[in-house]
Length: 328
Image (cartoon, rainbow, N blue to C red; front, top):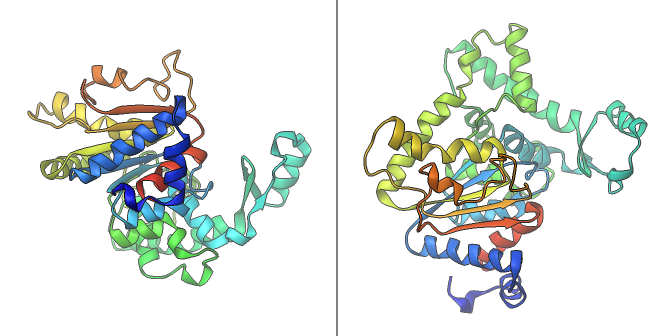
């Protein structure tokens, strides 16, 4: 991580990013690297549609090079990396999305193209292709009276190569493949608020999955997170890198006050670093837009915790920070 190993991207950033949000990008990146150099680890939270934005192009490398040690993400981000993995060539980009008329949106629906900003995900090649494979795993687990977390079902089909014949991108650019290879701790609160979550609920409603708890719940994810946080912070400080807001960030950061205030445990380490990339307005009770200092009052961060907020577009900023940390 020394300066002599800087790549062209990180060197460019260091030379040009000197003020305002740009300067915070450098400060947050340097602090990130310092945490890792000191023996610390980093926890990533992933909101929005970052997988459809193909964050895997840099995130997969961060995972494989041990720059990220745990992830909390939405169900959408979990599945959309796999959609891109198996259906990339069938995606449709709509660069003029701001000017689409309602009928044009309806036309996309008729073509089974689900739009995420400027990118349409093809239902058959992406969603249904994954559904058919993972549904076999749901049914098998249900029949065997076994229970797994949502991400564990997907890790299993990745490790067993059940999607390999459909790959349409370089596997090195899939963060889910990287996470499965590393057996990375992953937490997916509110998974039912996702396409696969809806499909699973439909299987239960239709009677094809007999036991709804075959897929383990968000409360169980919190219990597992508490165990993992406790064990991890016995060995090293743990930072918190938040992309966006919502449940992906809110859920895991609360593990610290829960351990301390609700379980009454002593000597619970606070998060050792905090950075959020956010475009939320800091006002009107918005938790996603709350400045990091507010988290001190909730017992999540301390007065001396390095903390940064970058008010910008995560699809632009996150790959730059990852490039900086990777010395690209």
